Length: 377
Ligand SMILES: NC(=O)c1ccc[n+]([C@@H]2O[C@H](COP(=O)([O-])OP(=O)(O)OC[C@H]3O[C@@H](n4cnc5c(N)ncnc54)[C@H](O)[C@@H]3O)[C@@H](O)[C@H]2O)c1
Image (tube, rainbow, N blue to C red; front, side, top):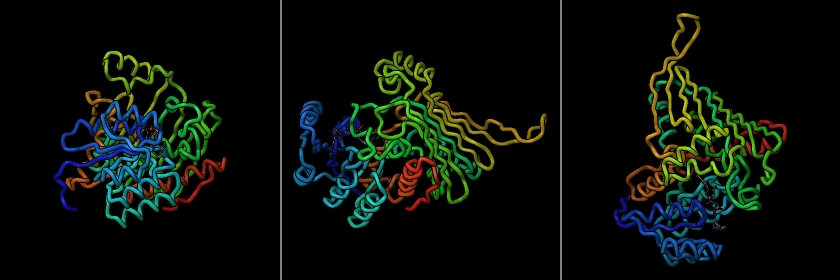
């Protein structure tokens, strides 16, 4: 790919929380020009134009024709991703599309076909892969220290999705379901850490504690990988009080943020990953902000096997968003890939199996019995 040394022309599609975050990060860069944003809601469009001083458009094709961006980030509701990504690619843009890539596998394949035809970059915003905490886990796995990955356990207990009742995020048709909207991050991590495709998905859920989700607010998934490894992913939504949500978000006042963070943990927020390999295991805890690598050793006093702590990484000096949700870092990486300076780490082709496994898990969960569903890439 030829190097692009000029100022990059960047546009955003969908100006909700994530779209505005992308604009705010990009506007700080000398090397990037924010040429426009597509937002169909007139009130939101007006407030974005005012707050960021950029041109907003009510039609996507008009924005693309008038502003001719080199690259776009798609931050619209999930069901819009496929058509919009295909259009942007066909208009000659490189595309970073928010997760989930789309809400069904046919749309993902259609997007990939457009990427291959046009030769543009099509990357999916799986920022967990580059966020500092999970990147450290991957670094340990790739060092060979824990041997071959055999079992992965990832669990999150958290509050309800934010957003208005009846909004797109709470509907299966527009969001794709709990697995597509949220657990897709963990499925992608399971695929990323294990280095092995997911071939079969089992999924189970219990009754909801949140009544306004039109899909389960909890899930347990068992994923079988091609190399025999197994991943277990669990999630429950609805445990923390609204005021505690600021723990990760409100970093303006460090003392307040710290207090909220402690309360968030006390009220039951939990987010961790345990990866067991043939020679050791690595444990990442987003609440403790640590990554610990353990190596299996013989246990002299009791016989059998024990573990020795090989390395402990305290990541609390890094901003919490950067540890887990490094949206800014992902956008910077995308810009560098567009310039030809870095190889994109979340190319659509490389994450297709994560998406296929997501849809297989959604199907298994819909069966009520959690029946195993073969993953079809
Ligand atoms: N990577 C992550 O960690 C992460 C976190 C949160 C959200 N997301 C994803 O980002 C995307 C946006 O989420 P959000 O939290 O900003 O949602 P949001 O509801 O805050 O914003 C969505 C915006 O899209 C606009 N919109 C509606 N229909 C549209 C259309 N047809 N075309 C373009 N825009 C349209 C809405 O008016 C709204 O302004 C979703 O795909 C979501 O799954 C990713």
